[in-house]
Amino acid sequence: MILKAIDTLEFGLIVEDYQSAFSSYLEEFEKLKKAAQESMNIQTITIGSLVLTVERTGIPFYTYKLTSKDFSICFVKTEMNSNPPIVVKFFSEYLWSYGCNQAYQNFLDWFSTFDATLLTNKLSRTDICVDTDEVTFKQIDSKGVVSRARKKEERFVPSEFSEGREFSGLKIGARGSLHCRIYNKLIELAVSGKSWFKQIWIDNGWDESKVVWRVEFEIRRHVLKQFSINTIEELLKKEDRLWAYLTGEWLSIRQPSKDNVSRWKVKRKWKIIENAGLNYQPSPLVREVIKQGNLLQLLNQTAGLMLSVAAISKHDTIEDTSRVIQSWVELKLSHKNSTFNQEMHLRRDRYLLPNQNKIGEMEYEQ
Image (tube, rainbow, N blue to C red; front, side, top):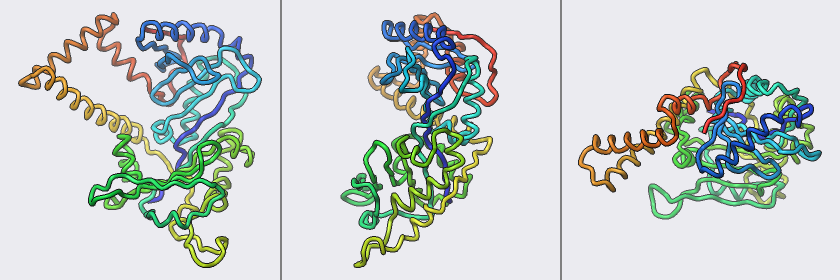
């Protein structure tokens, strides 16, 4: 298995007459943000058919931050000349659900709800990765790292099978404009809980007896501009040329010898990474696999929490604990003047679906 895809995408949106087009929305965002800060309760807003959380705080330069299960979107209060008025970040789960191009098209369908004229997008960051079971990276590989970056860092985790520590990967470069992470993805999954990746790998030929390693480049706007990649569309057209630079000129793993570094032979494992094409094609079932993976993670967390409640409350049966939890949920719903079905639908509608209904005005709830 060798699987290459875009794992993160951050971009700005340039729209015509931003202040006028979004004035009514900005007023609602301000009200909901203040309500969230004062009440400490989650505030949501329905735009089109998507429910988003209005966060208590924004990010630098952007006063309002809204999040769904698939992306975050931030808005400035007053338009500036130096930055796009809107910035968006696609989450990993969303990109692996649809692939970069379809994910962006789904987003545009939803964004048309605002009835604003979108002039262009402005790409600020992308993470491109390769997941593979065809190569294994070892600590000794760090001696053969040849890179334009000055910083190199080895990563370790406590060994499961012996005393000491187990090599888990490399980090090359400093966060900023460009850096690379090479790491044991199975170890990372144990921490992140993204077990749905395993099904994606199986669907693409993973030998489950092998470790999956990820090579991931985080690329910021400064580097993207050098390749005249300013938009998402340009990224998809020029990704192969960008990858050739990243894995051929900026970084390679070679076999050290007595010769000059420039004469060191590139290791076979790195040639496999270098030749990877942007080949990931999500199946229609991937979206549900990801949701089920998230469900499994929630169930594991719920089981642990129930046992903790039972221990603290000195319950003898699971039924006793279930009744306490049910009573507490009902009390919380009563305080919110809400119902179980209302809250369930709010959470379900935080996922962006293809061809999502674009008809509908703003709705907000406390």
